[in-house]
Picture 1 (cartoon, each protein chain N blue to C red):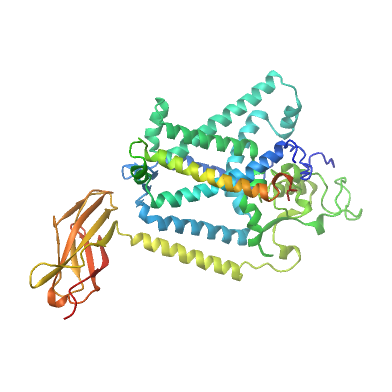
Picture 2 (cartoon, chains in turn red, orange):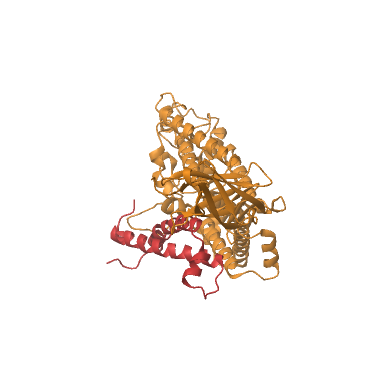
Length: 87
Length: 464
């Protein structure tokens, strides 16, 4: 079991999970929202909610980021993550 | 001076605490080039949103309205293909320049490098040169240290916030945005993205710096795949430099068995990623050429020829000729040119009109009277222009065919969509059988160039 992670290892862990998922989320948001209008989604799912398009984009982006982060974290964990000697 | 204390050890196995790198400031041709690049690129970034074109912001990614304005062009979600093309072009250019000139991108144009450089300037203004900064790091918290550190952070934060503000200004008209900021009337999403981008800038350029390149950048990991022995790299001339060592300026060092490297360690001190270029090409090297400038200045002082560390190629280092024109370069260049020409051509040929034709699914065909049958279509129109227009629909492909829409002139607002039911009528004798091809043409009434043609299927009664 890893003992307390050093600051550098933490940074590395964040760098190799937050960052790739951020990139993926950016691409996914662009592709997704280019073809789908968040306004249409809102009308079909939660028509009572008062949400602007900007809110739709932002929520969408963070959802993509969260999914990407989950996947990146699993990859980090399964590929040795904190115990791996970084090359 | 042959101290080794400046070299930062990345003891990766032990994860030794990282030492903050204080690159030594150097002057020289390449550093001036880099400064120029920083000023030009940041100038574009901060200046572009303030340019007005045709009465509106020249570059505006209007997400709420789902339109992108770039000078005279307006893009819609339907123009997504151009975004894809742009990304392909960007990727190809990166391949091309990497194969040709190595990590030019990293050293001169990458936002990480550019903003880090700007943040380092601020650090230099407030905390002084490298030696002063190293001393400041070790000194206790005196008033002077507090003042210097404090003013650095104030500068950083203000600059980062302005960067975030400019970023949001690409998505919300920046003039209105500045009014909202001045009157504290900023909306929640704008506030959020402004702070988010400011925080990212501040963290990446102020603190993470070279760690972004070393640990986070995917390009740094795969760029070597695009290299070949003819790519431009920054390299230390080992043949000429070794054996390194200190010496007096007046002696004939060759006679003493020494190479040209005086082991002054300036190249290491100047390196923003903390590597020693004399150990060979390393993936941490962002090709900023600071070591070249540092070394050249020393060579000048020693009256040795410049270029002990220089831009060169693997081939040149081994005494073989370097080739600029080689298959990889030619292929990238041809692809790049073809794509650029194609994109430019299609942009000039773009009609600000899109149309979708959907056949009525319920009825195949309908008898109007004994002589005529009709098919019903729903026509959706998107006016991508910046003014409202009237359109008329016409039909071609079957003899005697005519189309009726109500109203005849379909008006669609600028940037709006319209929908109209069109009935196409064809003489019974011409319409026998299913699946005739017809062409529906939508034409703007006031501009002949604005038109669209879609193909549709027309179904008539079975052959008898």
